[in-house]
Length: 80
Image (cartoon, rainbow, N blue to C red; front, side, top):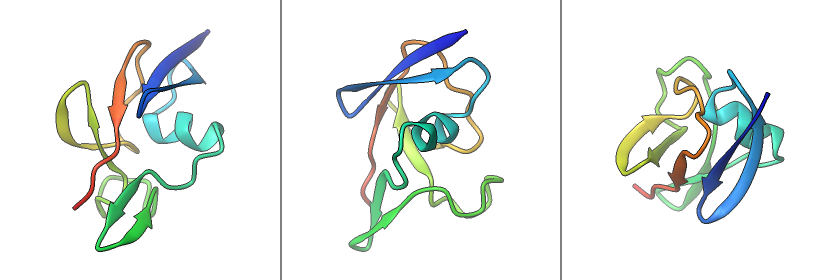
């Protein structure tokens, strides 16, 4: 079953059970956060490095590699 999430205002389609990082990578997005002027995305993939953090449904600091995407999620980039 497919799901749709909004990423910085654009709809992205994924599959049920994927993490947010999985949906983003599947949509061709390799980076989605800026830290110290550098683009970041998934690095470790296990929730340790914090490179993949996003704001999800208004909650800051969500690890995209750990959070299962849900239909209707609203995802926003973070800059730190």
